Length: 263
Ligand SMILES: [Zn+2]
Image (tube, rainbow, N blue to C red; front, top):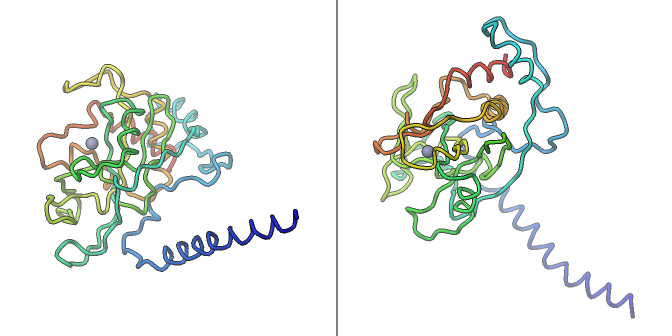
């Protein structure tokens, strides 16, 4: 009797297993985009293994920053995964909406949430059917430095609307939707700081981000091979004239910490 129960259970599981295998195979046969997502930060497999070995200080860092840098070089943030609802992100396309091939290299776009991290994540996990409401970042960094992975790097997070990146190769932007203006999303990795409580409004500035947020951001970006010249902000890529985030971002402070990791 007991044996029969197990046979029946086995028979019930088999079709589900087959379906899973088919899904995995189909997933693997999707055409590869020509965007090199491996140069963007990945979700670590195991946070306890040292992803970034402690590194020596370079002599390009000012003396008064050395103590901070020594601390930072051994710093490793906590992380969580809070995946967005699939309505709020999409595929990275190898062609634009007119069928022209695109070949942009990745950029990293820094944002701030304006609201709390919890409210941002709730929004990303809500299946919005109105396309105008569909939004996401790849990663969010809480005030306490915790890194929250939201959209895997191989997908196109909806972090910026009407936007262009002005780099060494001129203006870069990709139109992927007939109704929406071109955007950097197709080749962008979006990462946002949680805004401090006194910045949860439309003011031009606030008290700024925590040093652990800068450390976590540098730690995250140090795992990518995206050059400093291709790290930018939402404000810099925005063409709507409405986006000013991240307000109070201290690029110099960020670069000092980033260089302590990258050397
Ligand atoms: Zn933004």
